[in-house]
Amino acid sequence: MTRAEGGREAGALRVIVLADDLIWATRLVGQLGTVGADPVRVGSADGFAAALALPSTGASTDASADAGAVRPGHAVIDLTARAYDGLAAVRLAVAAGVRVLCVGQHDDRDLRRAALAAGAERVLAYRTLFENGHAMLAAWLGVPAPAAGSLSMPARPEVPAR
Image (cartoon, rainbow, N blue to C red; front, side, top):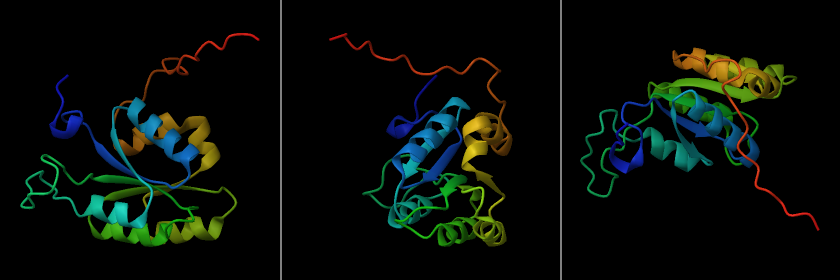
């Protein structure tokens, strides 16, 4: 498989992951990668706005912009962040024509309803993402889900006994 400019997979679905929690950001990026997407992680409102400001075609008139950088057509937004306003991020992405999926607490129904009202297509509880995230993300992106049993944990480094 060839690589596009900037080391990204050619033809892969680019997805912005807006999450300031390292654990959930890592999990989201990993799950998106296993379904064949090309996740672009940002952890702040400014980083998210910059990713949304990229041209939709890859043609840039700004000489300082990365060659081949293209605005992703999808965004996964963690609603429970402290570093940014998740609902404002949903509204910004929807206004830019980006499809949005959110993740958040299962018991915060008001926030989940507000995200849907702001334009998110779905809001997944963290537990749903943990238990069935690959299939849910693949369905949302319209790509095949990994076969059952095909996903494995990364190899653990051997730790010498003391």
